[in-house]
Image (cartoon, rainbow, N blue to C red):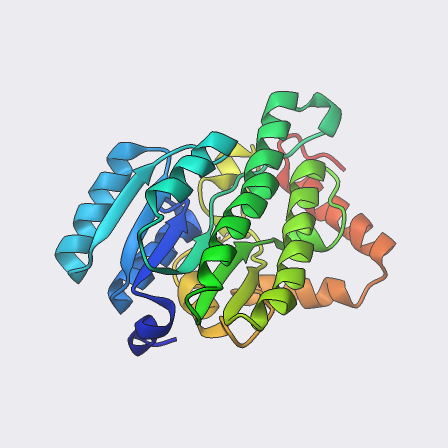
Length: 264
């Protein structure tokens, strides 16, 4: 994807989870390409800081929106505030995970994860797909995960939410293609973001989030799923050749080595 393609997917792009990790990498890459940006996250101060940075360094227009999209009314507010913008690219990078024995994890946190990773994906996609069907060429980038292709012990809820996103994106890829909407599922492996600390995981094999956006944008409109980075490709394709029960067993060992306490 080159900057000249702003005319197809632009002039505005919306990025959730825009203040850290992969979402931040996407926002920065899109700003460099000349997109006007709707930046969405919960922390207002970080949003405003990044907005000023992109305005100054890249000369683009920005619209920071501080809202909790894990709540239905938060998504409604976001959709309402962006009604009049010509948004042609939506990157839904917001999400979080947990790790540990499911029965020992905080139920409220697990349910909030389902709300953010799954419900908000449906609500956001429904809202913007209906808008983008009327504008022609558009893009929708959703985030699955390496763990979403099979059950992952010690990360049961998180892997299930990412399986939902992967299946959802695959279906939308075909449904929306006829309306000019390119849907892409991004399935990264371990990435150096705030995810590891929040999920209480040891992310020793994690790759940097820098450069992930560039690879994903190249795949948009050309692939249904992209596995950014060497590690996600290596692990993903290695696992894909194994029967599903064996993949679950392998993930049990991998996740056990990452969870505090070394669960096996």
